[in-house]
Amino acid sequence: MTELALLALEDGTCFEGVSVGAPGLSVGEVVFNTAITGYQEIVTDPSYARQLVTLTYPHVGNTGCTAQDDEAAQVWSAGLIVRDVPRRPSNWRSQQPLPEWLAERGVVAIAGIDTRKLTRLLRDRGAQNGALMAGRIDRDEAIEAARKFPGLKGMDLAREVSTKSAYEWTEGQLDLDRNAFDTADARLHVVAYDYGVKRNILRMIAERGCRVTVVPAQTPAADVLAMKPDGVFLSNGPGDPAPCDYAIAAIREFIAAKVPTFGICLGHQLLGLAAGASTVKMKFGHHGANHPVQDLDSKRVMITSQNHGFAIDEATLPANVRVIHRSLFDGSNQGIELTDAPAFSFQGHPEASPGPHDVSPLFDRFVALMEAN
Ligand SMILES: NC(=O)CC[C@H](N)C(=O)O
Image (cartoon, rainbow, N blue to C red; front, side, top):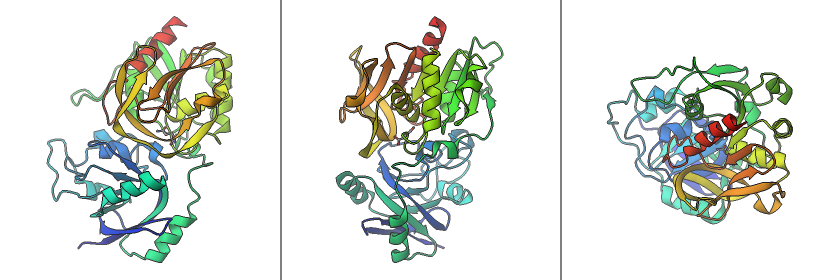
């Protein structure tokens, strides 16, 4: 039986469609992602916590779902909004159709709405708070729920999605035949802060000859320094970076101790904050897999995977921070490097899961930085 679903925005706009997930009500910030592939990696990316993701690509679910493609232990996106789901997935790796996979995980999802209209609205007015309802639907209740969502600004979500206890990561990048990666003869020890880390980041660090210890977001710097790591990694993650004072304080200690440090996305923003810069909320952010970013040193342009709604305000960067990457879409900051400490970071997603691999050399740069220190 087809169940109805409804998406309501805080401005009162409603879209009616059909449910392609679990029944229920879910609220969050509505954002659009322009990637053509990678829906499973997108909804399991912890950076999407409290966000309802609409995909601009019209056919979603064509290749089904596969356990190996999860970027975390659960779906973190608050809900999924698509134009059309095929009746039957077709791919040799597919274990389950997308709607069944979403329903099993309790994720509310809607299909059959005009996602082009929704995306244009978000581009014009900026990211909107919204509510997604499936099964029993009620417009007024949904609009009210959307209006009650306080918005992501000021929301510290990193500590909510983080691991509760430390663990060792031992897997290399998935190449389908070989899932276990041997880190027995690892040359370097990396402590990775989990603010909402994606598995492919850990794989890419591990297979470059690193033993990786993943620690909770609120682990004090002293505990990490006691492990005498060769490097510290700051992960991606959801929410606003500014209220993550525990992380900013810890990173300041790593900078002072001159520990090689590499940050991605939320980790990049936190490094900027620790260095003394400010972050700003963007109008609708960057979410896609085709964003051109320039490496300002080599002048090379890379096509990158992106997922962020906050950004470092370059005007606030102190003199000891160099801008090393910039977005060619809107000129916003994409990378920084400290001139007086071995620390650098990138705003996009170099692990590219999903997305193009142009930025993967940044992981080699991190390894080189650790080796040089
Ligand atoms: N992918 C991320 O790490 C996102 C960082 C942050 N939550 C933002 O929206 O900008």
